[in-house]
Length: 387
Image 1: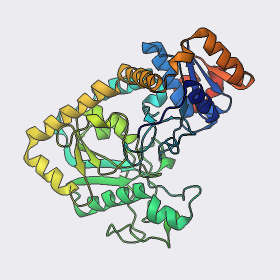
Image 2 (image 1 turned 120 degrees about the vertical axis):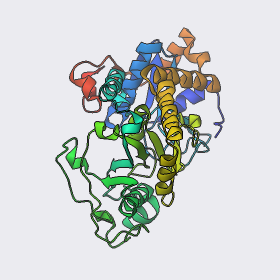
Image 3 (image 1 turned 90 degrees about the horizontal axis):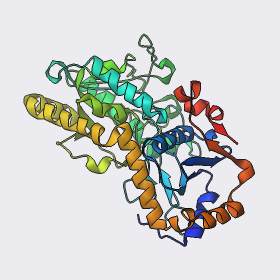
Image 4 (image 1 turned 90 degrees about the vertical axis):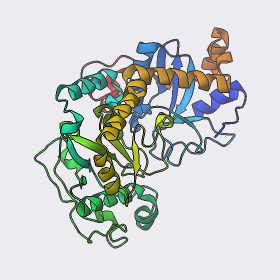
């Protein structure tokens, strides 16, 4: 939705009123103290810092929010234009888009390393398993601010989609291999934790999410490594468990050259306009997934071609330099739309604005992360910022 721009000065002031403002100025990055206490914020800063180093970024002051529900309220005149990492209900939702923070946790070097590892144990498409594969959790808790009934019946689209995928695996195990895992297992492939339907917080409020599964049925499966994903022709991506929005799972699927099966949902990320159904991915739903997999198996050349085209999504949009280029382009368009370059690119005007409006005694500068901070930026922000 088009943001109705105010004066450049007012737009900058509005950005500073948002708790998640980020200032990029002369190749340096500043935020208010406490910025890193919010989930995904440190990884976003890591990504922006990497973009500065890779391609350089223009001067910008913007509001950032990492909610899985996407930006809200930014279409109102008194609020800033907010950058989010997804839009829960499609492009008409207000705000602009930044890449999600799960590409190496913002660490582009780590993202490159992950891609290199994926190439080591490469399995030719025709030699892979012919089932649609998925592993993921169920959201077990009510969302803050929602009562249990609303969470379980209106808000839990991610749980609905996942439970329907698990039901499809029970109906057609030769076509679908989808099961529930637990965050408690992390990367322990020997770990299995019960995963009953419905999740514990929804017992007594919903039964089977209209899936046909028995109440209390355990849909748990074994925890697996990413190498297991790469041994399947078809990889299923489901909406996120928290709010039925984006899922970090899809980030690594594109580089496998498997056919990405995208569960039908309205959420979008920044690169989704490049997605073409039956060209570089296939949209599936509760009653179509088995028949689509069967049809693709009848036409293996088509299936393999879709998988190769899906790899182009990674190579064109999701490589480290690609992500950095997008961040640069997004900030350039943002600056042009709000005309804030008239202040930020004029040293005298910028200095006057900073002196009057920036909380200089409560700001930190983002510096290059090293060592422990590079590996886990979300938990070590204090190691790579300075007053």
